[in-house]
Length: 145
Image 1 (cartoon, rainbow, N blue to C red):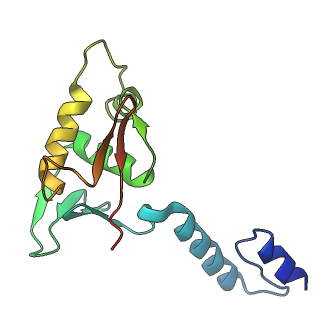
Image 2 (image 1 turned 45 degrees about the vertical axis):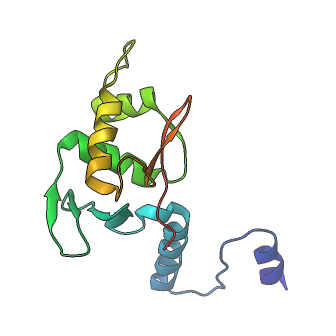
């Protein structure tokens, strides 16, 4: 009965004693996969491409071709993958990826987003993966299928 009450009140899982360490580790990894969403594995689907987090490249799933990324492009895509469906401020993105503060009329982050959209979006003029959030910045929206 305690297990049912715990799960009904919001627990992600329940494990009874005695338990195997291997089972506990598997359950923790399962909860972490659910909690982190898009970054659960070494690859994240972004628009028409897949970001390989280990090799730091974009892969076209249709033909397997790989496109290299600059360090700043990879850093930006990784931040988006770690924060799906969350609007991220332009100045924060610049601080995190370029390690500098944004200056007045600084368009560096906008230029990087434009370049990334050309690489990952099926139609860069109408982006679906990296969306603009007016007055805030940008948001990565993982594909639903």
